Every structure is written in C-alpha cells, then in structure tokens.
Length: 255
Ligand SMILES: *C/C=C(C)/C=C/C=C(C)/C=C/C1=C(C)CCCC1(C)C
Image 1 (cartoon, rainbow, N blue to C red):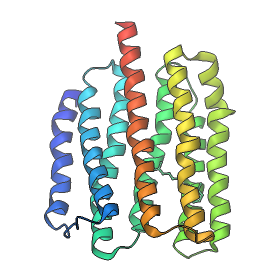
Image 2: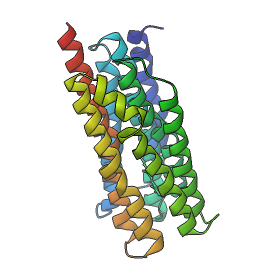
Image 3: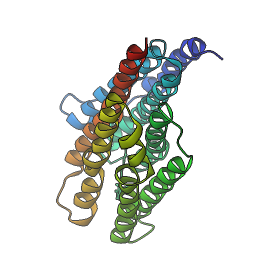
C-alpha cells in the first residue's frame, strides 16, 4: 500500500476509533482542571496524529517511516487519553492500568525512532533496537509490578530505574550514541541530541511522579496527573515534532 493510501485510511480510522468513547463520556465539570487537562491533551494528540500522517507526503522515502511511527505514538496515546479522562472524571482516581498499557505500546515505538533515525543515515545493527526494547520492558514491568502492588514499591522502582539507566547508556555511550556522533549530518546530530535529552529530562518526570506518589507520599493525585499529562505533551508530541523537523530539513537539503 502506498503512503498516500495509508494516510487516506489511517486518518478516518483514527477518528472512528475515538468516536464511541466520546459518545459515552462522563460529564466534565468546569472546575475539574485535571479532567480539562486530559481533554486538552487528547485533542492535541489527535491533531498531532493527523499532522504527522499528512506530512509523510512531504518528506523523502526513508523518513516516511519515522513520521508514521510518530503518528502511531500520538494515535495510541490519544485513544488512551479518552479512556483515562473518563476514569478520572467518573472516579477521581489515577488511571494507572491505562497509563501502563499506553506506555507499553508507545515507549517501544519511541525507542524505534532512535533506531530509524540512525538507519535513515547509515547502516546500523538491529542490536540497538533489541537493547532499547529490553531496557524498556525492564523499566515498565518493574514500575507496574510496584505500582499495582504485586511487588514491594521500592524494589519495583529500583528495577524500573535500572531499565531506564540501560536505555540512557545505550543512547549516550553505547552503539547508538557512537553511530550518531561519528556518522550523522549536523541536522541529524542535533535532532538525536535533543531526543536524547528528552529521554533524560522529560522522562525523569515519570519516576519522580512514582517516587512522590508512592514512596514519599508528598504529592496529591491531582498534581501527579497534571504532571504526567504535561510530560506526555513533551515526550510524545514535541518528540515527534523534532523528528518531523529533521525529516523535512534532510529532505530539503537533498532536493
Ligand atoms: C509516552 C510515555 C512515556 C515516554 C513514558 C515513559 C515512562 C517512563 C520513563 C517511566 C519510568 C519509570 C522508572 C524509570 C522507574 C519505575 C517507575 C516508572 C515506570 C514510572
């Protein structure tokens, strides 16, 4: 199937998949700011999805996959946000299980972006992809077992942190980091480095939330959810925009 066709079918499919959720939404109160933030971000994610898919038509072949993956990240997150908003509005509780299902799908897709961006410029081994995937799984499984009460919260946290540390090692000092610093053009290098800092600073928000939410008891569920929601704007939408920017820049440089 050509990319034009993918775009033609994917955009309406994205809209259809969220319509039934909208229809059964609980009523959002005008003073429920956490609920409002869930709503705003769902919409931003839908708009970002349409944007990334449509822009695949503008970039050269090897960058199209990167943009499609960015659009899949925001699509999957948008659908989860509709459910998460309902859980919050109806119960005032943190939609933990939906967040983790979302992360389980979107975080590996974000990791694939590092691999794809390097593959668009040079030959890289699949090992990068597998190591980033393993780090992701360890990070999320540890965190979920701790948060959902299947494991001591501190042990779950330590396991999760180890997975994240492994990811950071790979993109800064491992093969992925080396390939980027030795073989990439200036625009790819700068995109790679911004993406890396998002994974360091932007991602740090989630373990901080876990720590303050479960280990020190210092944060309310309201502030935690607002923080997680804003983190997702940075880590999903802004991350995608960086990739879009390098794809357009590289396409135009070669035109
Ligand atoms: C779009 C969603 C993203 C980028 C989610 C990222 C989630 C994390 C980086 C979570 C990290 C965690 C740790 C590093 C320690 C244990 C607890 C977690 C799972 C919250």
